[in-house]
Length: 409
Image (cartoon, rainbow, N blue to C red; front, side):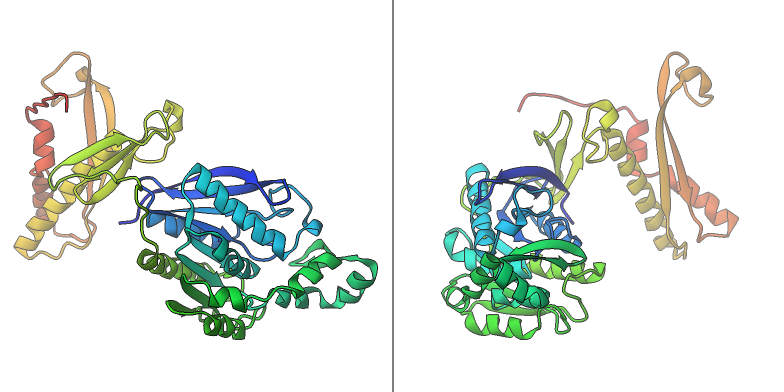
């Protein structure tokens, strides 16, 4: 069962002193470990691949920080003043931020040039246990091909404006000098962390031979994931979702929960435990045996609207019990009834408007329940199944005398 997640806008100071914009995706429950995501060259933290991967990891208990490098997206600073080394420094600053505010990252993920950056930064973040690259170049200088035609002007004039992904960027000579001086084989060989190399064999931006070089330079444990049919930016939703699911499962294996990590809400079989999350006035975390749920109120009532209301959960219990009861009866009779669905609505009505109610004063609770039996055409069967719906145990509980004993724990 997937966990519910939340997202928070944060910011921290980058290597040049500028404020960098970030998003922290995290589970609505205990965080087993923190991860740090570095986006591709001239991209932002909000590209689909980054957001999908962050959410998928959050559903598995990881909190993921993704941020815009200096001068990109919503971050301050001038892109022209940055280079590969400053990106690596920004990553280290992001790890410092997580360490100070939460916990240091146990997982680094980098896309394209961001993949090269996490390989370079991993050795400087002692807590990192695993690193994953996506379409990463083995050599940062690989990005020169994107503005090769402008290289003479950059070298002679000191800078030039180039079009990258349809947008103008100013590239300076110091950027070229910096990437040409970067060699990653040494960092990769001494990584001493689990490595997952993800690459598409038809990547037209960063050839798959780069993945081979990274993989060959690395020591075990190392793994390779072929992103068959995917483009460099993972622009197709199914490609990004496939990578996210595999990456999350791989991270489960290699990134262990840190000592002192917050314990999750626990409930013994047959019991339900509810506690406040601290995220809003009404937000509640619910443990029902091994399952995790969430309850909240709409924003119009002062809540965050991040989960069903208590009455929604009540209706869900009645609806689920109704459908299960009908299914059990139909199976016993060996009736083919197709798919059962139940629609419910709760409202307060005046007692005087209720013909079947014993109470005649004030307002009473009324639940409208519509049982959909589209797969049943026989009228006698439909009527019998409707009668069975009223025998659902939750229905009987709601209409019987219920005693709730409350005491302090």
